Image (cartoon, rainbow, N blue to C red; front, side):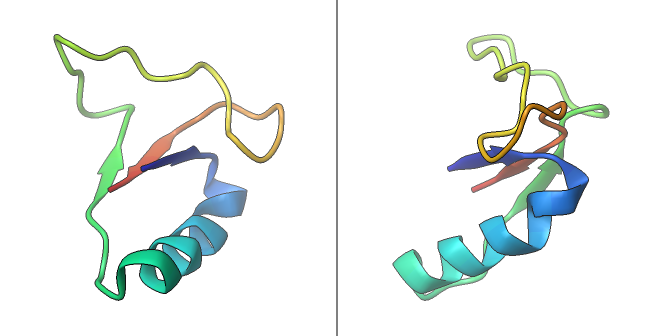
Length: 55
């Protein structure tokens, strides 16, 4: 699972495919809210806002 900004989305997809050998689901965190999980406030690769969840 990766939380990334738009700039690092492609990298997160590549990392997911390399690890799991399957296509990930991509969730836009601006459109979806989870009750039992709070998204990190920033990208795991930079200080930018974490916008996409790659699972």
